[in-house]
Image (cartoon, rainbow, N blue to C red; front, side):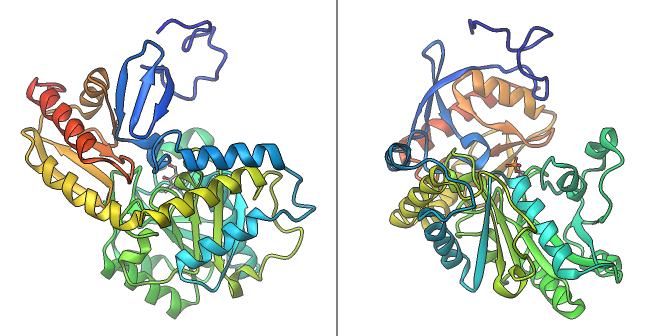
Length: 394
Ligand SMILES: Cc1ncc(COP(=O)(O)O)c(C=O)c1O
């Protein structure tokens, strides 16, 4: 990498919130990326489950260009035509009966859900219970909702009103429901926590508990939403309907956008002035989302993710050095045989032209495009086989 500005160290113009970058990417097309030296990579991570239709998708690029020439932004003081259209599409994909608030990221979608729950619950009912190992964002409230105490330490005091329980443990959840609790917040697959899918029994039990105790069931679909797991939304694997659903990442295929959906009766708790964001539902971001949803519907993205996910899992299980594979659809964790350091393996894969990340010390996360071709699937698995056979990470 040769750069005009240093990308790490004290003269770097960017705050050191991310580690020193190994590669600078300058171009992408579908599953392929190219760095600033012209080297080609296969992207099996999609910018952390964001570019689910692949890089520089023509339908998204055309929508952005068209909208950029028409109207970029007017604020939420006025109506624009695209946001309601996308809200209707999201409502249809979830199953109907709800309303949408648009924002710009996953953390903001969860922040909106937390505020909505507090407004719905009224004074004295404000606690949100989430699971250890979860990830819900980096704002102060969503950081506290995130069930990873080590991430809290440096930022105390965090906003109060969050409690954590063991993942996939209904008794622990039932025991945590005091009169001050208003909602339960869970991911259908804990993504950042290591790609740990929930079970139907757990989600159905949570739904029952929420109904019995008068709580909202909020499902965080920021990483799993928009077909990633083989359903439009991850909760649709489990035969439940949440009260609130949050989403972001794949909705814009790389254009920043988030959304919080809630059942109409719950959404009605928000009155004008309760919540807002300048860029929420702006024409440029929602035009990308409209193109994404249309393209995902056209290719039947949930079926593609389920079908290609099954092929990828079967191929990965045949690779020497892979101990187990878990996940749903095309959100997968590859547990490596031990001893092997997953970060060192991810670095070695990057050097060989395959982009993945180490989701735990022993597992790689794979989240390739939902429209991954057979050729690219085989090429990616072959790179992994070669790198593991070379003893990487030992
Ligand atoms: C499940 C989940 N929720 C929330 C977030 C936060 O989203 P953002 O980084 O867009 O704020 C993430 C990000 O990885 C996530 O995976």
